[in-house]
Length: 272
Length: 277
Image 1 (cartoon, helix red, strand yellow):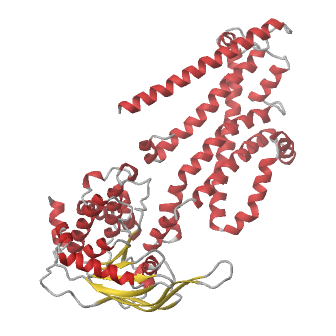
Image 2 (tube, rainbow over the protein chains, first blue to last red):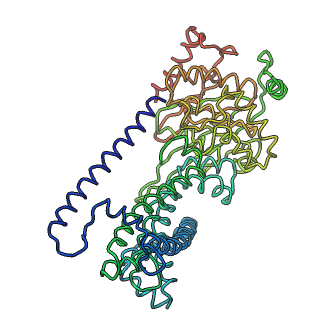
Image 3 (cartoon, rainbow over the protein chains, first blue to last red):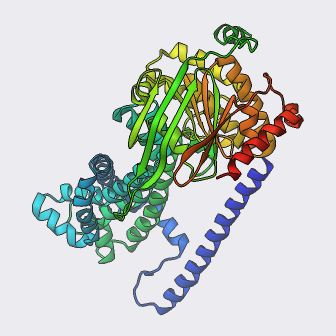
């Protein structure tokens, strides 16, 4: 028990050291950039300026403060990312099941899945937009496509990684296909599924922000590109950077938390 | 206490003064198993012309060097491996029929526990497959864990147990569905000597209480002599039965029997039958 606590302390210590190092490098960079004085507003603001901008109370567009603008647009983007994520995860999981049930199917469609994954999002977005003719739908679809692949590949790997003796045990007990899936394949592949979900959660959010920039209609990406073009305050950009990082990390740990609830054996083992 | 009482009712101690039942449990006739060669060459002959009769309630060991087909023979009886030629009859039925009736209990070399399930739920799993009502399952799991001495570890996960304890969970799981025949494939080979000796005594105690027919695969001669009524010595290339040796040692047996001249005599008899190979 004592050992566990000291290990935990160590983990926090390393995080704090890392954070301080990061802040120091940032501040050095901010001073150098400030010295060049290319623009009236500091292109690389100090940390305190960014944090301070979150608490600014003056209204920017007549009704909202900087932070309120970021927050409301973040809600829009996260909602799209979440829907895309859920659709992609469900589709990826089901397809992995199908590919495991019918092995020829795997050989047939797997190369195409990889192909889709190879197309850059910025190239794919206009194609999806042309097909759906709706920017909101295409935002969701692209988040789904990015989620889909890691979930499908990891789930399939998990289904294949089940030990042959575990399957033989099921055979020796005269278990049917449905029972083998229910009692063995689905639970034993869960850690793999969650690995896929953890990889794709931040990806779905990043993709969502990126696709936002293509057209208006609200979302973090829209106000981000406006901010970068100096149409609005540069602090919107930096607030988005700050909060996206927080959300990305939070999404990862959120999935880990769900995993521990779904798979209690995991919790006892203490691995994330 | 209540659990113990139920146990005494179900498992009647075997009376060794009575002669062992001579009813045939498993009958193997001219069994051949071949594995096809992947490169299209001659198939690998794993078992050739195996003839063997196993009596009901008998503890029988298959001993031999690796490659002698002892595991293949066990797997063929368990219907996990198809026979190329010959016939296996278990209680007058095919191995497949017996498997589908869930009359086999199998213990593998590794415990093969499901690590997302607690010890209790691992033992419970075969009964879930049988569709046993939950109340009966709970009682039965307690009884089985009591039998292998792990009642207080029910809520633990497999990775929290030692190798010997995990193997005992495997045995409890195999016995949970009241199998007629217990098939054990080198179940103790990965364990240390002390744990092994403890489990040998436990296994004999459980066997005495349950009256199952046990087929035990091992490459350890001492282990085979200590546990068995008869030892089937197998030889490789191709796998076949080269000798069947009776072990006429008194039961119940304790560790001290290993130091008697009778025990040593049988061990050397088995060893000699290997030298002839």
